[in-house]
Amino acid sequence: MTRLPDPQFADKVRASFDLQNAMTLIQASLPVVAHGSTEIHVPHWSGIEQQHGFVHGGVVGMIADSAAGYAAMTMVADGASVLTVEYKMNLLAPADGEKLIARGKVVRPGRTLIVTQAEVYAVRDGKETLCALMQQTIMVMHGKSEKT
Image (cartoon, rainbow, N blue to C red; front, top):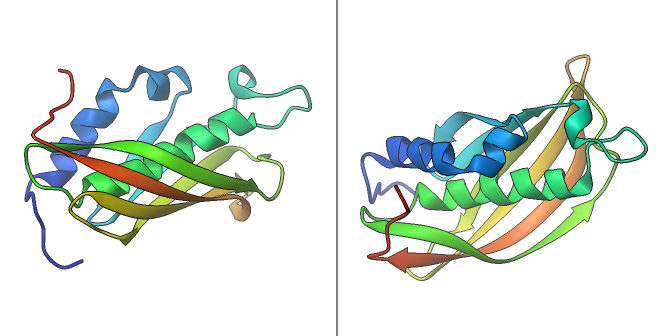
């Protein structure tokens, strides 16, 4: 993963993240964008809780999907975008902490398909607890830009 297909990959990923109203809805941020990896952070607040007070599994899946998808986006050429075609997630522990951190990374880059992984951690008092693991397949859409 040493070749950078698009030298402006971080700007492109951040601009795409800003287009995701769903990330705004859950108060997510994108503090880390590196070649082949990203992080999404979400504060724990009542609007994203399920009936037991944990962050809802759908929100956990949302940030895992986006973190890994944006990791893939760091690997594609200028003028291409990405789209999730499948993912499988294991929920390992309740998403219970002050915030969640989803760390996405590229496992295998490809011209058409990119395989990624994400780990989601619940953070309480500075201690991270792994609460979800995800594996994902991303389709590269050459010549297809995102809505602006």
